[in-house]
Structures are given as structure tokens and as C-alpha cells.
Image 1 (cartoon, rainbow, N blue to C red):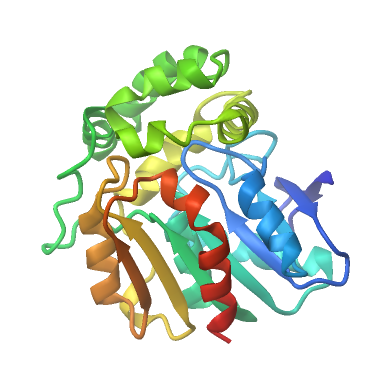
Image 2: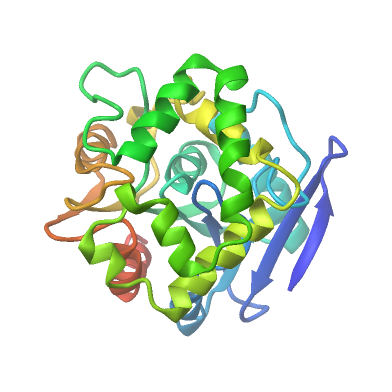
Length: 289
């Protein structure tokens, strides 16, 4: 089910909900750029465990109203409003890639979080122990270099990429981000994950690049919270072949989040880990309780 919520401040939030009505929600935070369109493999695993799959397009993506200047931590209030609309007082949380920091914000501050799954999540910029762009494919090195310079420099570059991304098929998307896809990720670009990527990008970028811009700016600025202060349980999964979010990000987060259950895996990429490990990841998440 796709619907649009009106938030307390009047902004609109596009959401997607599926699965058993009485199941606890698993709130999934999508990647960058992206949208509420589901990751089908993960959605099936969520349903198989009796949970509802819930995802919102972050502000600026799809029909969700932009929140200029948003920080990563601002996702908490929107997620609380979403859970309120669902009548849920407890939830599980997950995030992939650019959704990782937003999932961690919920782990830090959202009431009722039972546990959090981070899949190849971005680490924070500006910490001396983490070279933010080291190990990224060339496309991301350029993109985040522009993000550090600000919106006036970043936005034109993302706008130039948008027409190709919203019209390309899966093969076209793979070609457009070739520097970010190692062989292990190319090997899983099958019909399902390719269709998921196409649908998510087209929906997220249909009205412009505001959400993408604001995500990148939020990642490269203060997140508004410290992961060292997270007290709810977290399981973190990261592969060492990842060219979108380098292995060093997962290593840093594994050392910074108190009590984290960290799975730092050889040979896994950014997409392969989400495709091949979905069942193991969900079981590890539910075991946190």
C-alpha cells in the first residue's frame, strides 16, 4: 500500500506499507538516492517473519516535501509520526547504504526501537579516524567532494545525472555507476534487484534532486547525534569489496557503536550483501531482543 501522510508541521511524507496488519513494523530507511519503493528480497524475508515492511521516502524524494537543511537526526521525528499513524508503539529499524545513518539516528533517539540493522551504512565525515572517501569508486569520490563544497556546487552535478537515471533500465544504471560496482555486485544485478533499483530511482528523482542533495549534505555535516551514545541494540553488516560505502566505514562504526553485533565480511559488495544475506541479517536483528 502506498499513501501520503501529512506531518505535524504540514509537510507531506510518502510511505509504503506491506505485510500482516498485526505484525510489528520493520521501518526500512532507503539508500541514496532512493525512495519508498521496496527492496523486494528483504520485503519477502520481513513478511516471512510476521512483520510489516514500512518505508518512507525521505524529504525531497518523490512526493515527500523537502526539508532544506535537514540533518540525519531529523528523520527521528518523521519516523515517530509514521509509527503514530500506524498505531505502533514498538518497531524494528533497518537501513541500507545512505539509509544506515538514518537507521542509527532512530537507534539513538526513537522511542520503542527494539533493535536496528545497518547494511553497508555510511559512516560520519569529519572524524579523524575515518578518511571519508578513501576506497570509494570514482563516481562517489567526485560526488562527495562536491558535497563538501556545498549545494551550489553539488546540485548542478546531480541534476546533470538525473535524466539518465530516471530513464535508464537496469543495465543502463549499472553502466552509469560502473566505478561503484565490483564484479560481486554486477553478478547479482538480476531482474529483481535491477527492477527494484529502476523503480526506486525513478520514484525518488521524479520531481528533482532535492532529496539526493540534502542526503549528501547531511552525510558530510554533523549528524546531530553521536553513535557512541546509542544504547539500543544494533547489528551491522559490511563487505570488504564495497566500492559505494568502503569497508573502512563499517570498521569505524563497528568500533564506535557500543555493544554492536558487527559482521565484517570478506568478498561481499554493496548489493551482494543485501541480496545474499537477507535471511541471516533479519534473523540476527530479531535475535537482538
